[in-house]
Length: 194
Image 1 (cartoon, rainbow, N blue to C red):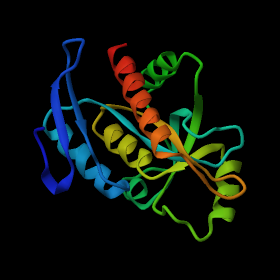
Image 2: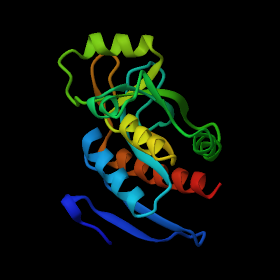
Image 3: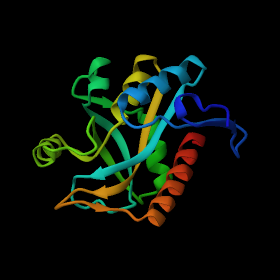
Image 4: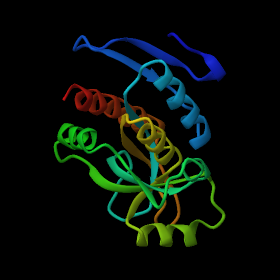
């Protein structure tokens, strides 16, 4: 562990392939994630994979399923403040590496980044986001992708479905969330190696 600044734990070392690897918590939401990415860039980082959880808004996604976010709709304040228009694209090479590492055992497409975890206008927003092509909702991808884009760095995003928000809300069990988190790490590391 090399960092505990702002209560966000960070680990760095050498991965099993001999390459340097840093794993850094960002906290929840775009503002915190943007700060962390800016500071990691200042320290020399040039490739980023945001891994975390999302809520499925499209039918067909299951609890625990992994989703490669090829783009994030910018519906959060941070990415918009950073000049994002409608959507921010992930790095094509990192996205392809994530998809290859998933080997067909997951989904890929657009997600939406928002500022609200509990959205009182959820039904209306979900309909709008689905119409714009979003599969799932989360809170950090657009900010991470946009900060990286502004600095000429590569960034991608891999998410595990922790909630299905179709016809109510179904939440993943703690055990299955732990398993999904382990898969996230393995797939992300395989994509970075590629």
